[in-house]
Image (cartoon, rainbow, N blue to C red; front, top):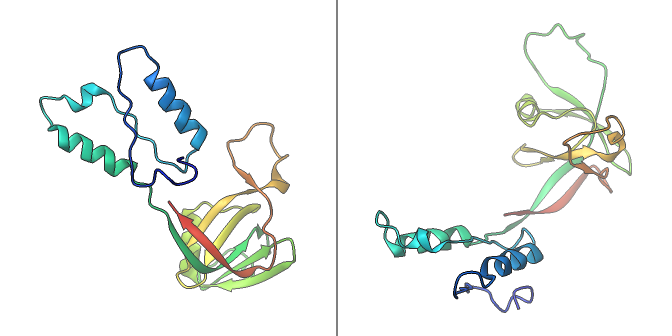
Length: 178
């Protein structure tokens, strides 16, 4: 019923004597539904506190359980950076522009970007071989993960490997924020 969205806007309360498997059932349901469905476990001692009102505790848990998803259609430049030779030789004092090599399955493109995007690239810790996208209107940079072409560099890593972006370097994309 939850997967078919027939339980939308409703909560599930499991009540019964101790040791009957309420917690195990709740954890099983939450793991089966996945991370997209919000799950907030509660213990009775949280509700019956002398410091906080019952309604306040319940309202706080309801707020946590609300799963808000925002879909946006944005123009993005999805890419995997490549190394290029520095034009100035590395002795410059300030950044006038950023030249970045972008690569997708369909081809490679070299772009000259605004220096403000450089700060976003540094903040996201973008390195050669990362898969990133740059929003065309705001210049925001989002690191999606590491290209799976670089997956064999080390034996053990904590990186999330993603395939090289398909299609053109410049495209429209639907972005879902949770």
